[in-house]
Amino acid sequence: MSTDTIDTASRELWDTAKSYFMMTLKTPEDKSQAERYFGMITTVAREGDVFTIFTSSSFAADLIRSDYANRLKGAFAMADAPEMEIKVQYDERAKINVVVPPTQYTSPYVSQGGSRQSSFVSTLPLNEDYTFDSFVRGPSNSYAISAAEGVVKNPAKPLYNPLFIHGGTGLGKTHLMQAIGNELRRRNPSMAICYLTSETFLNEYVTSLQNGQIENFRHKYRSIDLLLIDDIQFMAQKKDLQVEFFNTFNALKDQRKQIVMTSDVAPKNLPSIEERLISRFEGGMVQEVESPSYETRLAILKKKTEISESRVPDSVLEYIADNIKSHVRAMEGALTRVTLAINADPRLVLNNETLGRLLRDYIEKEQSMRKLTIEEIQQACAKKYGVTLKDILSHEKIQSIVTPRQLAMYICRKLTSKGLQEIATAFGKKHATVIHGVKSISDRLSCDTELRVDLEDIISSFGYRLSDAMD
Image 1: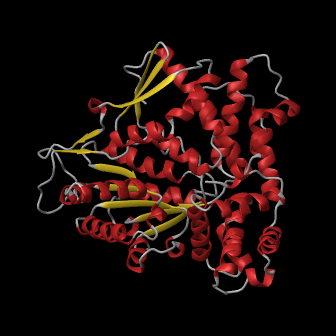
Image 2: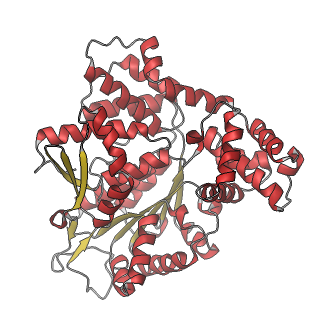
Image 3: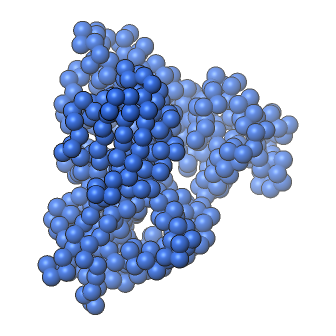
């Protein structure tokens, strides 16, 4: 977020309120999305009881206004600013531009025609903090880092094009992807770089169709040098979007332009994605980011405190690294909570007892995730729906069995630390089947009240609340 035009008091109030707000978000996906759109905030300003947030994108302004503005009021109240009215505005003067002067452009992989736009407006801004230097290396991510550095050294070379990075939520895929963009922009400022999510790609595609501007949309995404696209798995079951992306992918490859993608799962395990797309995803380099070891988790926490200049004792970092293992964002959330507590009371004694109380919800969730077994969940779902465990594990496709089976998969994914492969193996199914099942339940929960009641009944028997398992 730019600090050039932000007064210190407004910036500090926003930073505090944002920290409190992020702690209220239940899932890593929610935190990731909030971070993504808050990253498009350029300035903030307070006038009395009105706090105005300015963004570099009208799309981000609309989303923050509709999805976050009312919920942010509680966070401002926690930051000692009650009754604050939140306004969100798009500041067109702050839009992100990557200038590409045609006469100075020297990219070795520019299209042979040589003609191109004189400037390019990035869909989502790159986070300048996401660099290779700030990315903590360890055995869990070493191969993925090497591949990312290979892209920087040899952009658009067949070995690394496309680069497909996959792994669980909160393990650093987006950081690594944006590090590629930041480093290539540093090396070649004239390079046209675009970062976006597949969700944003879909929204722009639909809007362009509605406004009769599909050719402008195609020209925009087929006239760039580096395409960075996050969360490619969300293209599942969107056939028209897949066709559009397939043609965009081919156009960029034909012009020898670099493509980098991230996903929760490997290409072969993507659900409801056309085979021809999967084949192209696998045509370059595929690398996985795995869960970090204790040593890597501790190094990540130390790096975070160095960057933020927080004075958090090593013993506290060791406590967090030892007790919070599911993903990096959970660790960061715990670190933020401790940092806020230290800032509020510098005399606070941070022993194990104090940390246990301060981070109780994080630790309890970690412990519950490790204790709950897949078989327990399968049995509970079978009992709720009056079927047998054998039915749950069968290949029967009647709805009376499919629903408890998919619900069991959903709960396993949400309330255990088991990976997709472990869940798939336990159900005798493939990766893609589990992903499809989880998504099916997630979609139904938004409109099926009876299913929500069933879910709440099942998980309450394990000591969970409905909010613990909802997206």
